[in-house]
Length: 166
Image (tube, rainbow, N blue to C red):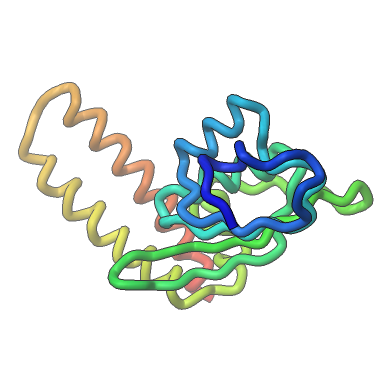
């Protein structure tokens, strides 16, 4: 085992599978900028990242030849951690497009109506709505921008919660 910033210390052909924890948005962006990605010779990648950071990495993986084949979510000490198992895209398999809600919260988690994700979405909906309500009494360009962001996030959260309405 060794520690590095993303996958920068790996040489091509060195490993078949990796487990990456705390692989956040910045690290994912840096790997993307360096072109290292996950390496075409890695056949299995397992990610665990705080929930707010997973969207960018999922998007990066899907755009760079990987398929998310399994997702899980756990709650540990008040923090939500989505995890994913990723494999290289198989040429015969149909490439899927994920919408923003599916990227943000995990298409497979939404489809399986994962109970911890539902808890997370309800909590986020309440928090965002409370913040939005507090901002209603304030003025300014940055307030207007933040209100728009919150409204957009609420639309996405509510779209995710529709998976549980069945």
